[in-house]
Image 1: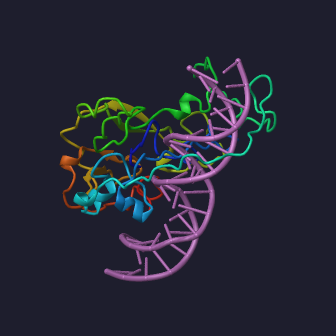
Image 2: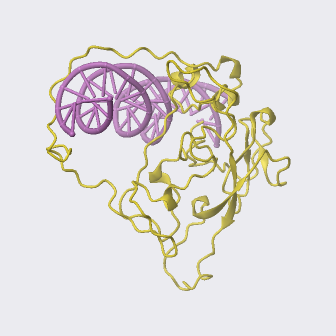
Image 3: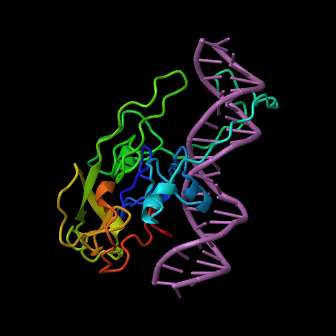
Length: 258
DNA sequence: ATTATCGGACTATCAAAATG
DNA sequence: ATTTTGATAGTCCGATAATA
């Protein structure tokens, strides 16, 4: 899995978020899909995921980095008349549509501290992997926050602190007091825990890791290395070194279909 | 098996309308 | 002045077709 969060959270939609056995929510928990503010022309044309960095990951991967430019956004129409709104009741709620809570309160697993305030997504599930909230891209440096009209122009380059993730295999069935448990524990990357380490940037990788042309580092043995590790773009455009054990990113949110 | 294409679901944005 | 609402513009998921 490539750690490639775009925006505040992982780009992996919550409905695909790796829930360990026993933590699978009963309600379909689906986070919002994060979108970049402005996709490059290439990604836009291809209807593919872009990122905030220029050149974007996809353009780098396809060797068209020099053609990676922001697409033009057209101005929103003004003066469009709108029909009357649904009246709100006295409490500021909409008079109609008393909706069922999209995500009913969920309780953290044992050992997790209770939340003081409810949030749409419990932090223990929403925990950012890869970049911390606000970061745009793990392997490249995002553009500085766009200044609003009237503000000063872009400041110095904006480099949020990225993280690397160290996979930690979970205990296999039978090792945790569930001997004989009929539940099948899939041997799949999604069931690995991750220890998050600050990085900056690593100088060496394990012998089992491989550089990919797109600037990520692939760990062939998905049994122990389910995550993709990223590295800065300057180190990225080497030749693909091949794949020893199939595509780790198979089924990966960020490298499917690319 | 891999890559390209693209329909349409989904999200972000922001001005109009509503409210305090 | 601030908040809410909803329309619009845009992103990109995921299915399928094309190609190597």
